[in-house]
Amino acid sequence: MARMEARKKDEKWEWSIVKYNGRPRVVSNRMARLPIDGAALHQAVVKIKTKQQLRRWAGEKELAGSTEKDTVEYLVVQRKIWRWESSEWEVWGTTEESDWEDVKETWTMKMMG
Image 1: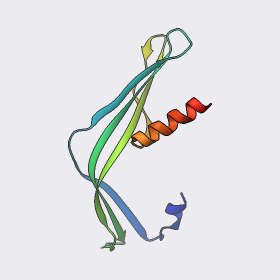
Image 2: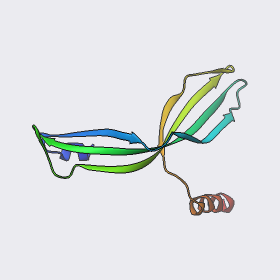
Image 3: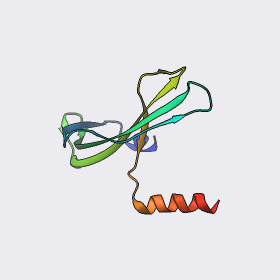
Image 4: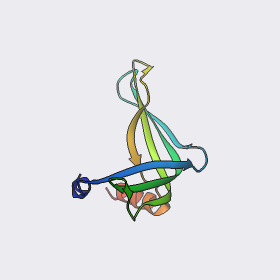
């Protein structure tokens, strides 16, 4: 929010996806039953590679600092199961890719208590 408020009032920012770099891919697909009969959560993570563009404008003039870059995002979607009926998929949020160091650190913290 602070970044948005710091923008000049007469400046407009325009974000767009230029192209998809390949097809989105499901990299995680998990379901967990809850301790209530007929209840569960189903969550999937989708890896999306894109080329994105950010353009800055002051009135009709495009400002310096407009950029294009390749981006990899991990979109988390979730649906709830209640009485064995699934809800629609909803966007839960985004996440970062974990590497082996992250996994080892999490595992070590769990083992130590």
